[in-house]
Length: 194
Image (cartoon, rainbow, N blue to C red; front, side):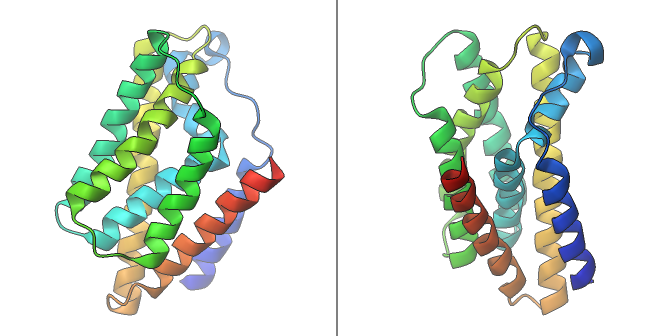
């Protein structure tokens, strides 16, 4: 089981490395352009999966509250970009979200679900603003539905991994914490390499 998880993670990492271009909405449609948008950036993938992992570690209402806060606030950031509201440091904050959320998972601090929802919402606004800034010729509504769905699926994957880790270890959380540390380290690597 652990070997499959490691191999899956390595395959995901390798598959996303060359993905620098986004789908053309004229050729693929606005929904698919939006759906693929978070999947074409390793920083987005890691941050969103880590949000799900953090929610799984908290359990209970956090399983819904934390991802919902991220997706909802991300849509607000998208709308802000559409209305031309400037937001400084979008890309650095997105990279910081990978490091911060990874560290929070690694540390497993006993924070209330509402506080975690607020923390991820802060970063989600920047993720959404980035999506809005790269809308291009896509239709805004379909693009937003696409990236919101892809984000929710990445959160779900993180939740599923977190729950699987907990079942495998009887709730000790060591695998989830290691995944958080690896996420934070990868975020630092992306910041230095970029």
